[in-house]
Amino acid sequence: MEKLIITAAICGAEVLKEHNPAVPYTVEEMLREAKSAYDAGASIIHLHVRWDDGTPTQDAGRFKEVADAILKAIPDVILLPSTGGAVGMTNDERLQSLELNPEIATLDCGTLNFGGDDIFENTENTIKYFATRMNEKGIKPELEVFDKSMIDMVLRLQKKGFFHAPLHFDFVMGVNGGISGDIRDFAFLRGSIPAGSTYTVAGVGRYEFPLAALSIIDGGHVRVGFEDNVYISKGVLAKSNGELVEKVVRLAKELGREIATPTEAREILGLRPRG
Ligand code: KMH
Ligand code: ZN
Image (cartoon, rainbow, N blue to C red):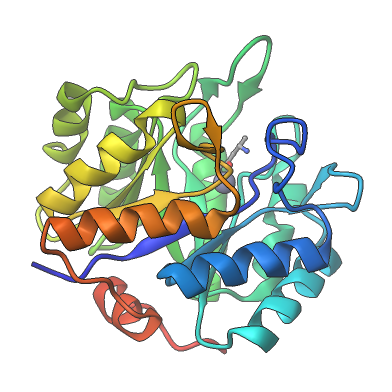
């Protein structure tokens, strides 16, 4: 089986220090959390950025400040910036993160309810627009799918030339408005992607570690981090993103799966060297 790629989603756009005081906002806090995740075994850091007061932003300058600090400390780590940003941002506002010229970035593959009155809007034309921008820049999309219909959208757009094999998916499971994190739903998504694709699983809240275990067994990859879950076990806050990654590393060890280095992760995902 391929080695296991662990992604750490260290910050997200919605989770706050009120949920877990270790949620990073400042550049120094982002560096601390990225380093803790990398030291524990993560090869990819999924990046959102905040202003110092915790407000989410897609500002290109802020992304550069955070990315420079992280890459100075851990030059070989893979940065995977968000083009999802936060609910309510415009498309061009969201796309500013691509100015980092990353190897890989998220591309959200459909619209969904996002709790309360929030709608995370990704129309077909938005998806085409984001795919075109990433293709022009040679950036591999990590296809964020929150439901089965979003895989169907990707496959339709692949036929039209917007996406190219091998595809890489992130099954984001357990969002209030998306597919649940049940085993049945995992099997449904897993069975719906083309042979030769790679995938990672981001289980939200209590789904994080059960889905990590399933993916480890199945040959998929795993995303954990404060963006998705702030608890290390029921009712116990994680001290850091590194602690969440350590738990995945322990599970992988028990289940006989080796952890990929960033170099190995680049090979598995077919990423181009950073420009
Ligand atoms: N914050 C969510 C609205 C992504 O990074 O592409 C979108 C999100 C997905 O987090
Ligand atoms: Zn994200």
